[in-house]
Image (cartoon, rainbow, N blue to C red; front, side, top):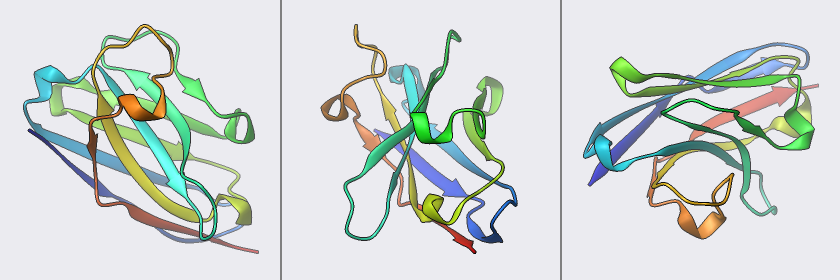
Length: 125
């Protein structure tokens, strides 16, 4: 089993910045990919960003390219999502997820095995 615990959400004004973090524990050797998803009220959950522990190009959904940065601290088994120039439409519950190696990049939604409880990000206008 893998446990994921998110932190760092909160309330920020539009144009501001937040960093959310996800600490992984347990069978961390079984994880290959880490991702941040978000779900806003009435909307489907979407993959925002993804990264492999081994490095390589990260994935970003189009709406956050140039504003969000995903990174890992391999020694601490932690993944961060730095969010800059936040917009009200970024308001959502942000979830950390972990998954195995897949040929597809990013992994398909069904490939993600483990999920955190989520951390709320609210951007006021």
